[in-house]
Length: 109
Image (cartoon, rainbow, N blue to C red; front, side, top):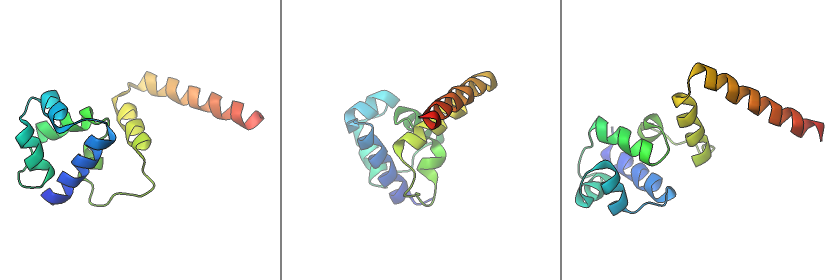
């Protein structure tokens, strides 16, 4: 994995989330210096910290680690993936029902 590319993605995700390096460091219990080093690609990050950052930024680890970012993927897409992956099977059924109702209602107009 390219640490510089990962650091760039982490920085972009942090900024999109409206967080400073200080707030991010506090959220995952590390130093601000550590966040800066990781964002610049000068330090590797543990899987545990990467998971915490993905949660903090409302995105997924696979999005942060992917080799190529799709231009069509938005922060909303990433949040939807995160929420979907954390939902139980019954919650997923409910979500799909609600989505279908919204689409049906929109198509009737």
